[in-house]
Image (cartoon, rainbow, N blue to C red; front, side, top):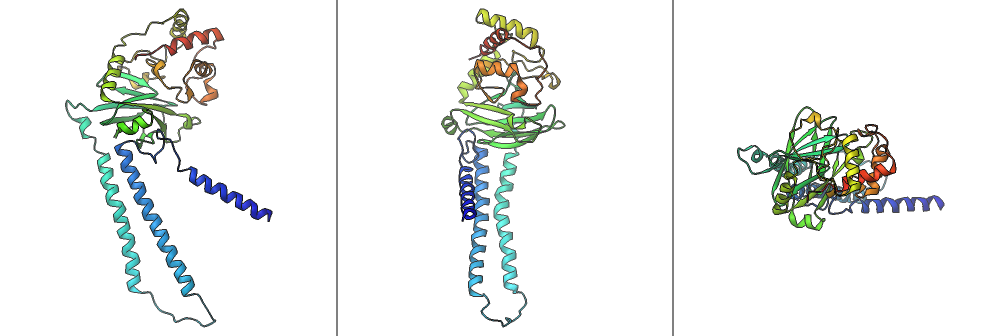
Length: 351
């Protein structure tokens, strides 16, 4: 009885886990699509699931019918017959038809998603973002707008945004679950694709989506997150102008922040930029661009955006992202220096 009770409990937890696996937030779940690409992928998921479930149900029905109708009732050996040509044709043709039903929309969607011709047209007005992946952070360059930011991608809604994907170190994969993807970022070639962010569903998600690396890349792969701020075109244009207006390092807003700026210029400026210019080559992208750090929603992509978590990150980044490239690249700081540096960094805002 005890063993039976254990199996009942295990079965209950298994069912609950299956049910909960279908739950998700609108800013993160693939089951709550928030864009044209995600809609197409979700429709293909539903189609393939429907086909698989249908096949399982039909096979189970046939199994039950055969089990009860043709079960052996005595010791006599039934009449031996060769295979039915009619049945062989049926169970050969049906899988072919099912494959065609699944293949046609899949191939059509693949070609549609692979069409990035608009981004390569001369004088194209399309938004293009060069994505650079690093261990364990993301770099976003807007070549037409001549700005660079990191860890938070800013995009307009209701229009296609095109991406050039490349890795600076090892293979990563760019994925925004609620909006579409994923696509590998390689070191030796550039992958291209597009996404479209739906304004209504972006609003339901708080205009903030979560992006992730979807390719195992090292000990902190699971922590290689980035955020996506989706806004209407006017707000996006305003953000671009704000970023473009930052021609040089922003002035500190207080005496404490001024102390932090001095510490930053001495210990951090060698890797981090605080201006959004995009003239640097890939080899110079040593650490995230911090131009608009004060406007972000997370520290290091994973921690709450406040001074205490920022100080925790600077104090010991290895605790939060093992194997990161920041550990050991700057001198240890006391609490007063951390307070000053946090004050300066949180004040880096462009909006």
